[in-house]
Amino acid sequence: MDRRRFLLSAAAFALPIPANNSLAFKVLRNGAPIGEHHLNFTQTGDDLAVDINIGLVVTIASIPVFRYSLKAVEKWSGGVFQSLHSMINDNGTNLEVQAAKSADGYTVTGINHTDPDKSYPTYTAPPNTMPLTYWNKNMLNGTILNIQTAHSYPAIVNSPGWNKLPTAEGGFIVAQRFDVTGKLHLSVWYDQNETWSGLEFHVNGDESYQKITS
Image 1 (tube, rainbow, N blue to C red):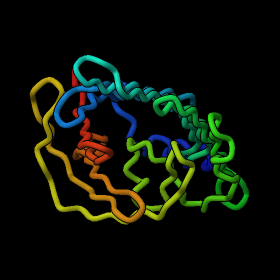
Image 2: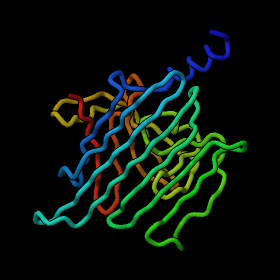
Image 3: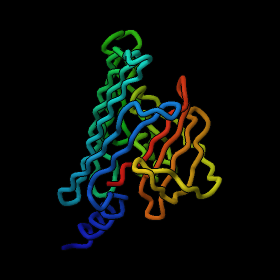
């Protein structure tokens, strides 16, 4: 193996890929479960593909009043973010985001298939852009790409310290909290191995993620 291939391999392995190549979370709204968020990691040499699936249903008196689904594929090579393609159904609004590495950074397009006039024009995001998919803590060090809106924002981050987080099975994880502010308002947690361990945000209710550990 030549030096260049060795360095690429080392960079790829530096990504915080879970030991079992998957992450799963139970999603709660105001304390009640509304769905799950799953990530599956596939490595082929220096390449990494992350498949993301989210399915949420909010009910009132057992009647569904809100549905949300997301399917996305995120690709990396040599430890460098290469592309993302996401498809979202936000309670009947069909959205799509495409991002691909270019000479100047990343070419990003946001498409609103339900109302094309609300599509986000194609633009070039800076070279330090990473998708808002949470599993890679390094996203907090650069520009964050929203995989639903196609907007990108500089990360404004503060860490108030370490917490015990409840898991879906009733246990707990010790993880460091990071509060993201500015255009985004959320809290995300990573354990001592830099593995994504929890998430909280507020969108018409308090939503939180509890890691499924079994």
